[in-house]
Image 1 (cartoon, rainbow, N blue to C red):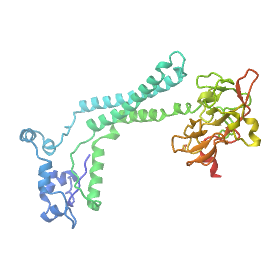
Image 2 (image 1 turned 45 degrees about the horizontal axis):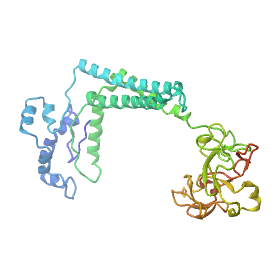
Image 3 (image 1 turned 90 degrees about the vertical axis):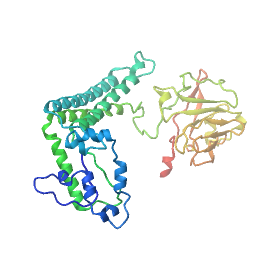
Image 4 (image 1 turned 120 degrees about the vertical axis):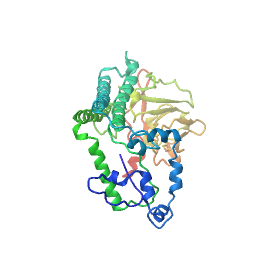
Length: 383
Ligand code: FES
């Protein structure tokens, strides 16, 4: 791929490509008038001059010797490596290698999808150990195939030319842009893309397969339990027990005064429902200052609040038992757990929603129903 900049070049004579007409970078620099070489084509002082060029492109003597005995392209490539023209046989071999890499990508995508569907993904299931590593490996294979194929294609089958772009704060003159466009067009023409159907086909296949990669992930956006009013309901329902992270139910008497427990609804995937985590707190009954309409929502000094911060959704689990303050570690919102979790400090705009609780006949804590307000960030305050 070529790009040329610098002083304006005369139009190439008929039969010459723009690159040929422009000559090597050294030729172009040497041919520039002295005032242009020192000004970079405008009235300001350029930071590129002959000495800088010499310094940048000084080449060891043995390399110059090697280049001078090689092809004209190699001579022009002093200062950078260029690949030589491939024979038709080498070209076909390179094409096959690139296609193989693209097809490797297809294998990766197929492996990813098969793993996603066939390997057990639930914790505790036999075979689950390999689920994530396999997914990752196949995804890596898919990305590697397309990436490596593209790199190899560029390295082996695309035309190559070392180019220097002078530092210049403004755009190139129209003539130069036209010359660059012509050189690009010529480069694509030399790449013979239209005459490489195997490459085009395998790239299309690999790229298309890669586009399928995220599709299975859409099915992981669950568990999806609330079929209706998804943003306003949680996993809590009347009679649902309060369970710990390990699945054990919490019984009256399990918590001493001043203790807290993270609780989840005892429903399918209850501990994974993002909108349902809550905090059970035990105080002395006389410490609780609850409004009359919520007097039945607490049980013997036990009270439950959503543990999702109403600011931006961080977990609110830091409880200070002397002051009854609940802290959010993200932006220091502070709630008073003894007064319906009203906001004492910080950016949260509303109290933590409270869950009405009771105790069932076996002495386990249960919910009286769902939260009566939406849990989580203050999206709800936007009217
Ligand atoms: S998320 Fe809790 S204060 Fe910001």
